[in-house]
Image 1: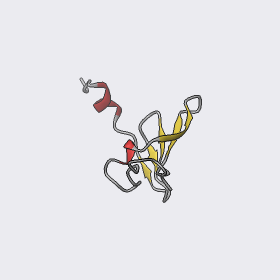
Image 2: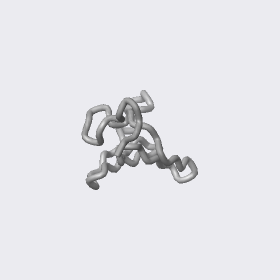
Image 3: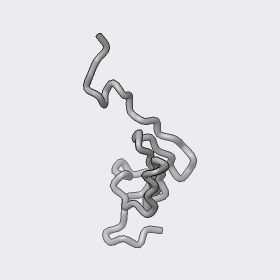
Image 4: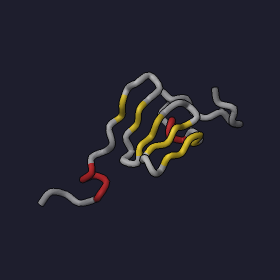
Amino acid sequence: MCQHSPTCPAADAPDHDAAQVIALHPDQGWSLLCNGVVTFDDYGEILPDGKTVAPPCRLALSGSGAR
């Protein structure tokens, strides 16, 4: 698996996004991390076991609320 020193966080670790990028595809909007997690530009993720992590709510990111 990870050949980095120190070792990258595992895919099931709370800080799994801190793993190093091993494949970057900004033209397609995704990156593959050393721990097997695929991250997307909208902050969604696919974990190595196939589970998905939805991106955060856009309202929370923009700082604006409903009026």
